[in-house]
Image 1 (cartoon, rainbow, N blue to C red):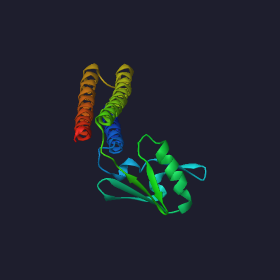
Image 2 (cartoon, rainbow, N blue to C red):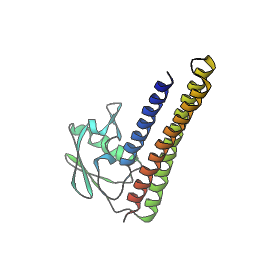
Image 3 (spheres, rainbow, N blue to C red):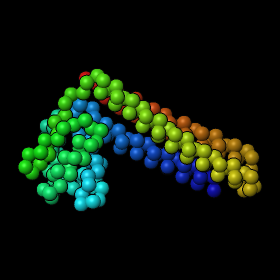
Image 4 (cartoon, rainbow, N blue to C red):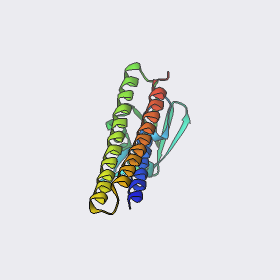
Length: 185
């Protein structure tokens, strides 16, 4: 049972890191990317719907994103959603598409993005630590129940800690890479 607990925690920690990576894709780095707007929610007839389910999103140039909705009636809602978002972009609606021009980042905006990267990294670390705590509680409960000996429980806890350290190291590595990408001019 204890190896299942550790492998389950390992899997969940990996998913936490993957979620952080997906969130990192939405951070603007001076280059246009569809990930910036894909998960933006739009009020579509009273329902909050992800933008990628309402429109085709493309990057025709390095500094421009084009959003072409499948239903032209939703153009205004897309424009409002972009304006309300924290992207800091001004949508240009021209008939059937929304164009987003990505300006180069200022030094102040880069520093704000680095703060956001660090905040997201800390959220991932906390999630990983919470998973470690839950798994450690399960392992200690197995030891108290007598299904695992004290030595084996100690070994399992050490293994759990090494797994946690490995995933937190991965968070730090990915965060440093994203920070460097954001600070590139």
